[in-house]
Image (tube, rainbow, N blue to C red; front, side, top):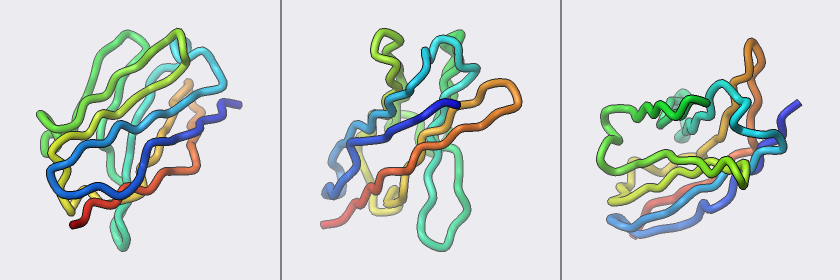
Length: 115
């Protein structure tokens, strides 16, 4: 059982930045993939970015250049740096860990982009 705790969400003005953190209870180097997903009100949950145990990164096209996923194995933490935030980035952001056939989720952190 992997426990994930997200932090770093909040209210930010358009054009601002936030860095989300996801602290894992397990050694993230042994986790196949760590992902950030988000869910806006009335919409389906969607992938934002992912990073594999081998270090490969995936960022959804519409967020490339603004969002960057990274990890610190020593801290068992994955980050999502979000720059040039837009109102449409408003959502609950979830951290997800994929280990084999198992999926683990954090509780989510709210990001609100508004003036």
